[in-house]
Structure formats: C-alpha cells, structure tokens
Image (cartoon, rainbow, N blue to C red; front, side):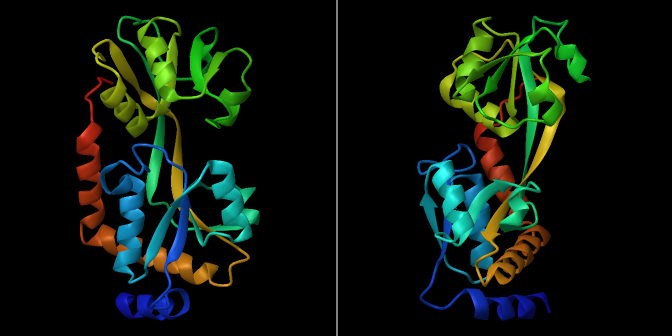
Length: 248
C-alpha cells in the first residue's frame, strides 16, 4: 500500500526526464563535494528520493543564495535546513532526517568547568561561530563572554592552546574537524548535556505547486529506508569515519 501511494506521488513530481534540483551549502561532514557520497546528508537525501523513484540533482551554493533560491523557487528543494516558525511562512518542511546535537567541549584538565545549567558558563570565555543561532537564552546572555570566529576549527585550536575556556558545536562536526585538522585531542572532553538539539529537514517553497507531493514522497521514502535498515546503515558508515571517542 505504501509503495502504491508513493507511485501516485511520482506522477506529480517526477517526469521521466526531470530531476529535482536540490540546493545545499557545503558543511562537512554532512555535505561536501569531496566527502564519501558527498556527505551524510546527501547520501540520505539521494537514497530517499532514489527509493521513491525520483531523480535528483545536487547544486552547491552559499547559504544566502541557497536559501533565497529555495524560497523563490529557483531550486526545487533546500536540502538541509533547520525548521523555524519564520521560515514556515515561505517553506514546507519534511519530517526530520537528521538531528544536530550541539554540545560543549572543554579541556579535561579544567575539572571545574561543567554544563548542567546556563549559569555555570557565566564569566567563561566561550568560542562561538559568528551569526550562529545556538539557543535563545545562550545567544542573548550578556554574562557569558562569547568570542566569535568564522569556523569551528578555529575555536577547537584556541581551546587546545588555552586561549578560550570552552567551545561548542555539532557532535559530528566536532569529531570531523578534530579527525581532519588536529593531531592531538587527548586533552579534550565533550560534556554530556546538549545545549540544543536541532532537527534537520528538506524544505520546498510554498510557491511550488508540487510542494505537498515532493514533501510527502520524501517522508514516505524516509520511512521506508528506516524500516528496512538502510537508514541506520548509512549513519553507521559515515559515523565510523570520524567517530573519535572523546570522553563525556
């Protein structure tokens, strides 16, 4: 029955000679031209649409161009995006296909630094990313000293060199950056409590007449690959590449 329902969607969204244009911003280890199967997010997206019988074409852009192009309909799908109420005015979102766990990482020797509540960060120098929306109260707090950088690896290096007290980022991103760029991580420790967990979706402009059909086809395909074990196999394969066992 699910397969039949999926085929009904395909008649709307997938003519034989047409491939959905999926716009993305490079963000290793999730998305990247040089990554295995172009990254974890891309392999999931392509597998879902392939399972649904829908052709897809990945287009790499800067985030402003990707977002604007998706909203106005230049591209059929934005491939990786967090869901917010403001964005829902222009976009329709799929079910989440991944989650970004934002956690703090510190030096093991700083045994006094912990994160159980936000007030424990008061007075600390925290390495953050410019214009990154972590969590409302964290972003707005004036008691936490935030030192912004353009890239997570800068904060990780500063942490290792004792230039900041603590930093934070997505768990997979932290593991990827350390594995790729840092020779030593023996003194680094990820704290167990996440500051935030962000769900990751595809999104389609409400101006696209097929937006409901595209999203429904993706959701059904995602459910399908989760039920048959394909989804877990993809996660396991990619996580094994960069999964450094930093104690928590």
